[in-house]
Length: 186
Image (cartoon, rainbow, N blue to C red):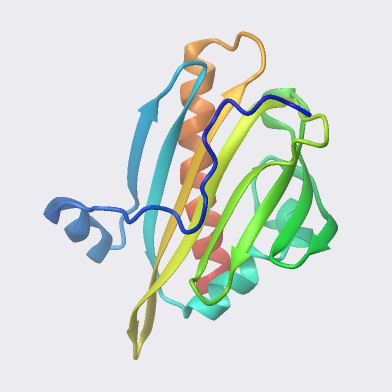
């Protein structure tokens, strides 16, 4: 069993507060990013409005087999177990010529329209720890428009230069929202 260095979510993720400026940016179809540096990593939230129904957006997020085709730097992704609301997936990333393999335990609540995750601590991952969530909230029905939130808190094993951590964190948040928008609206 690996040590948990990040507090996992127990239940739905906390409500996100957006400023008037951030709401205006979302209305203009811009991405809103919020980041906090924490130790050897950090957490961030990407928020984006998408012209699609929550059901369509979830069909993209939960289609793990398509991640290598849809998501930059994902070279492999597969579900290796399902138990009730839990979905266990293996990811392999290849950013900047590095291979990073990690195992995630997702908790999906379709009724609440959220999904949280932690590492699958029963398996050995190349990350020290990772916790995060997806949330999809309907905004309008005609035309359909939904708000997507993606948050990740990550700790890397060993020493990684700060510029590399910043680049991975920012590009990860931006790419996560962008690929879902592209696949949901396209």
